Structures are given as C-alpha cells and as structure tokens.
Length: 271
Image (cartoon, rainbow, N blue to C red; front, side, top):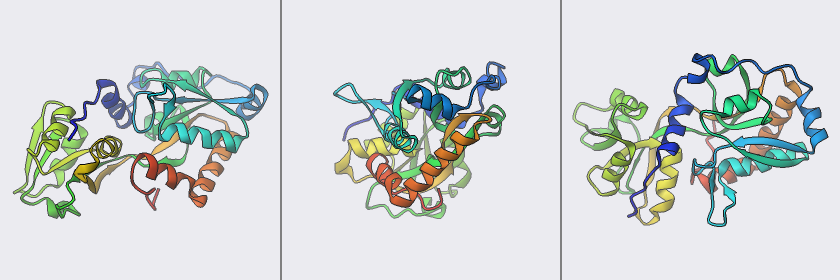
C-alpha cells in the first residue's frame, strides 16, 4: 500500500472549510462594494472567473500535464456551459479567497462550506458536492453504524473535528488510537495498526484511488458540511442561474458522474 502524505496546505483547507471564519472575526472581510450586475459584467467580459483550490485533491490539483483537474474543475466547466461563457480559473487559498470575491477578483468561489458567519457577507448556491467526515475500513469488516464500532480499533488525528466526532459515538469497548497529525492516523490504518480510520470524504477518496488493491470502503458518515458556490450578496440573477445549473446537473446525472469520477461514490440522494 502507498502511505499517502498529505501536505499541510491540503489538510488546512479542510479545517478552514469547517472551522469558524477567522477572517470575518478579524474584520478583514466586508460586504462587497456596490457594483454592476454580475451577469452583465460576465457577459461583457466574455468569461466567468471562478476561484478554485489547486492544492486540494480530489477537488482541485495540478495534473502531470500541468493542467488543473478535479471535481471543482469539472464543476467550473459545467457552470461555464450553463452561463454560455468561457471559464477563467483563478487559484485561491484559504486565506485570500473570501477577499478575492469581495474585491471583485473572482465572480464565484467553489468548495465553500455554509456557515452563519459567512452568510453575513456572501450568498450561497444550492449544495453541489458532498463534504463530510466518515469512517473508512477494509472490505471484510462489517461496519454500518456506531454500534458496529464495538471492539474495533480506530485511528484519528488527536484534537481534530474527526477526533471529537468519533469520540462522541464510539461504544465503550472500542479503541481510539490518536496520533499527532492526520498523516500518522492514515499511516497507522494503511499499515494495519488499526482496523478503521476517520477522515474527510475528500481524503478518503484520494486514499482509495491510490490504494486500489486494498479495497478500502467508506463505512458510514459522521459529520456533514456540503460544498456550495459562494457569490457576492445581492446578485439574484447570477444566483438563480447557478442554482438552475445545479438542479439540471442533478437531474441529467452530470453531477453524479463527477462525484463517481472524483469521490468514487454516487452523489448522495439528499444533497
């Protein structure tokens, strides 16, 4: 098996999505300044600028051919077709992406978790991608719910949301092995030190893709925070068109194909 090293940037991206909006608390972000209607601006420029992560597989990364690829890259193309315009991908980070949107450097952001703090300064489309914490294990292990964790060994990164979530639901005779960082928890599972691990569905999908012979499976979900498209406030026309594109992509199966391709699981029926 290949032990999967996750860079701190990838892991911090997941923490940023779920955690409190630090930039908001610091007062860095403000409501978007007055501007012309976004749809008119997109039509005039002939392109829609979409902020995406490029260091966050399987949602966004750079392939061997130096071209971007991932769930969000495919989603950006889907949006471009719906708006009948070209797509300009703009690489963003967890630290700058909200400011890029507020400052007009991008028209949209992908992989945005919806929180009350963020809702004060931006708007959200309907959910287009699942994001959640889940329990993963080998194919021969029958684990479908919290009760099935009884007697099992589980690896998790100490002090993380993963740790908090699994600690709340494990039976008394389950053994949680805590490691100093996510890489340690992943390595422990891949080397057979534990029977199960708890990671995000994005990390789980990457591990499954890099270790196909292991037959790793997602057993069940723990915590859900799906991805939305982030938009500046007071853009009803753009919001409506994005939501229409998402509804159509769910209806015709396009989003399910993207989910199967990058997350190795069908799009959840309740998304």
